Length: 206
Image (cartoon, rainbow, N blue to C red; front, side, top):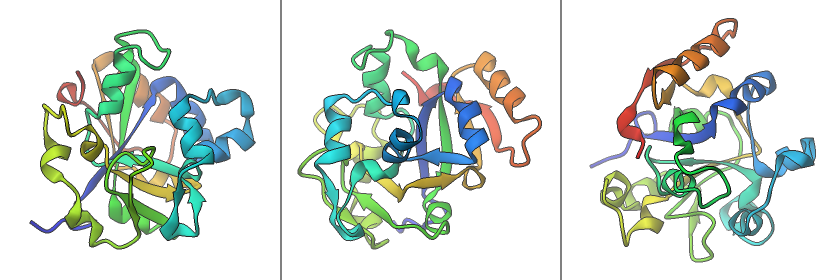
């Protein structure tokens, strides 16, 4: 099966409370850019620290993973599971306020910034990176699409990475847990020039 860039969806998860800042800034900043913009925003866990200071994307001039805006190739990611379990410092069950911002690989590449595809969790030392679209074919799509992914967490967590900033105009959809959050998102987008489709996608959550 061929994975066309314009049909290969990518997903970024964030709390709905972050959306006003994303809209005001015109898009998503990388962790590194956010740290420069406002250091108080970032709370570094050990994985985020690795991404910021240790793991480099060799196909993009050796820049650190934390200098890229990260996306998964699926909703309902292992990271969402971890966050919802309360393992990252947030309250258990917090997925209700988390939204999925949806784009495509083609929309990312069209922004003319360095980009890469990782074969698994980009925060792992054994991840490999490529800036060749052929790398899409080498991903473990069975794991990426699986609802039961124990033992394949790394492969399911493959990422699309775009350097520094992902423009808001590149998003075409926002998936939400319930009607309450969807309405909040709709309200935020009311006066914004670019308004992605907002929908309730309960099956994107645990």
